[in-house]
Length: 254
Image (cartoon, rainbow, N blue to C red):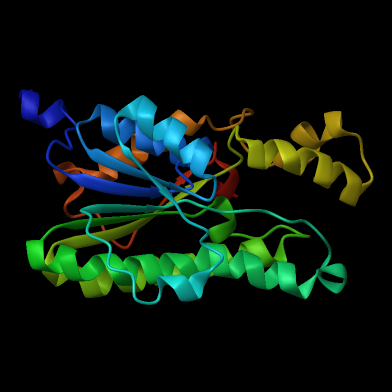
């Protein structure tokens, strides 16, 4: 097998990763930097973004993606865009705070649209682009008490597919990665929230809720998602577009 067939290189490419200071976003930023990309770590925490950027030799971008009006006229000059930033709030629909529902959609659906919109002109001009949307198993299926998150991720799936259809003639691909429960601070917080909402102990949440339908009984590691994102960003995935890649231990195989 030739060296070119096995090497995942992003030498000469520029990448922007939202939510890049922790969890999946950080894993993607680290993987891209290790492959030679110039990485911009975008995060709501300026300090965290600067720390990660310094560690990987990248650039920090402190940005609050809930302030979507500020993104309307943004111009984003990058070869690769990873939409990863997200939050989670758990409550039954009848108790769900409307402003929290709107906040989740601003961060996880409106902001990705505006960032894609800002990045496409440059990608089209160069004839190359990679849009990688960190969706979720909940972009394909639903769970109770997560109406805002599930709806936002389902919307992201549609946005990604539309981007793939429009971008294809211009050398731009767009795909979703759909992890199950990943070992991140977001999921660790969910354990306590799920215990409260379902009336069970925190020690039961992992077995009876998070991994109940998975064939492989462990959390996804952020680096596993970062590895898949890296492949999607390279030339090896030039014909992969409009797809949704599950990495969920078989959860959505039911």
